[in-house]
Length: 227
Length: 278
Image (cartoon, rainbow over all chains, first blue to last red; front, side, top):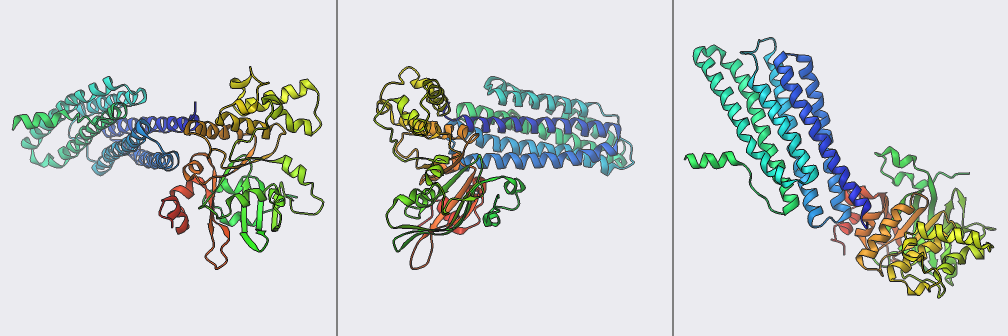
């Protein structure tokens, strides 16, 4: 092989992206569990995890810049590295959503949950499951899976709508609950946004393989049709 | 005996690992003259062990002169004179009583154009060891095989060792020259534009080979191909002509290759690596 060293460096970037993804999954599940249990110490730990996520993202960016500066990547190699830059940034933002949920938890202080959490943990489980498979598809450059995963975003949207409607009934019944309802709505919204970013990762995987950007965000199309 | 080279201040101090690496060679206040013309001026540079150091810079800035100073090859140029010092494992190589042949054995060289001898592949590689007095066939066989394996050429030539070295392709010839250089077990290998006469694939093979070689040897490469320096080297020295009336070349910046190509400190380096020079 003529570019063994370069190949190894690209594999390292790939492994680091996977590692970043695992950290984001863990932060997401833990942030929701901490919210469910109202565990403030655990919420603080998420803030620390977010710092590590941010650092790894910068490390990955640096690795990529170095490879672009020194190795003259072309064609598929260039698409791969440019996509990794984007994916690292998407993962870092997902980490921010997990951190956002931890911040909500801390802001709630000693206020009890408005209601026991059922759908929000489901959203977190679904989203992290999608993320794990999206990263697997990225690792294996499996475009069929990458095309399928964004379709599952509807499930997340459905769960979000359910949370939204439920919280609205609480607010309508007792407007004094508006603050506590809002906290939970905010947490659910973070998870909904996370799933959208998983779609972006799948788009990049397809781009690496085909060289074409396919817009996979189905929910907006549906919105257009309803108009 | 190991000398602390004054170059240390040039190295990016933010990176602790750089400072701790052992220096195989150190260049100290080195100037080289060809008669009255000063080709390079007061160069200070560390050469770190088991690393690849690239010397880059525009044409005529003294890159090859600096490289040839590292094994006293300039001595062969009539009228050349050297000031300053070069240390190899802490010992000065420009000193009375230094065995120049021994210096050149320890610091080998690969040139721009592949220059195999008009001899068999085997004899090309065995040439140096024979000069050093090794004549036992089984020993030579072993040395030749090991050198050709190290030069990533063995698989391509194992069945035709008695064919002429000149029958090989350009890229193979250059790897043969590398095998010839490493057959006498040098410690440092100097490469002067080792791939400039080769096609891109043969070039990448040489570059990949260098990554293997640096595990055992210290490599210094001169290249006008900036991308090549970026691809292969661990450290980069940027040379440029001074602004004085009598223009001679000197090292204006030295650092980890990563730093030189991502975040050069000197504006002239930045202009050169971004293609805005001149």
